[in-house]
Length: 255
Image (cartoon, rainbow, N blue to C red; front, side):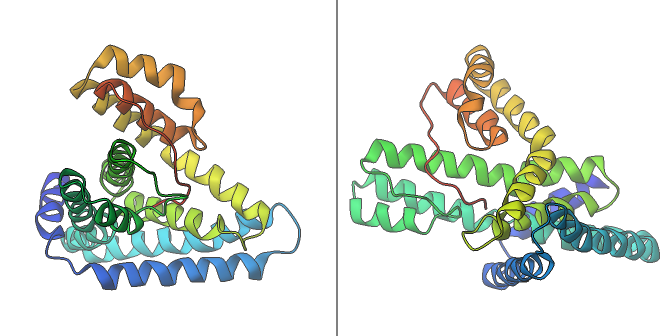
């Protein structure tokens, strides 16, 4: 049944309208930012109270809905996976970036990179650096929107895993902005590292298997701690070793 839902998700993803989903997620980030300010009282435990206020009702509602739907629970899983797995716009962006780089159109390449699925801290200069940035953004975004949600979908009952994983990433995006209270940013970073610990290593292992395995594992062990988030470092270091190239860390906002 998992396979059927995943197959339908990938087939229907290109038919899913992008704008309404992104608008919904932006509203979610805004609501999470408001929650942080509402629960902020200068005490370090408040971030975890806010996390519980968000995640517990979502998990409970999903469990109740799936139990009530019975056999139709797979339809709920499909709807949830279509919300979480948002690859069509990422692949389209990567195609546009690759085309601009192949044609040597610096202005178009810079414009495409500015519209990256991940907000870049700075735009790299030079075709080689921009090409590496495209690969990096593509790897991390596909991990965040496909590999990690699929793993949690397989490991946890129903669509609870993918939805909570998406929620963790949206919490991170909302609480690491400049106007967020510092304890909330720290809690969001820790929460994301917990949620991504296993998926990041599964993604890195998959990359190592299809590439140069020995170099990927060596880079993974030696370089993964150089990144701001070690889980990202695990993926990018493994990919760098597998592909025989250098990958940097030019941005800081998660997808």
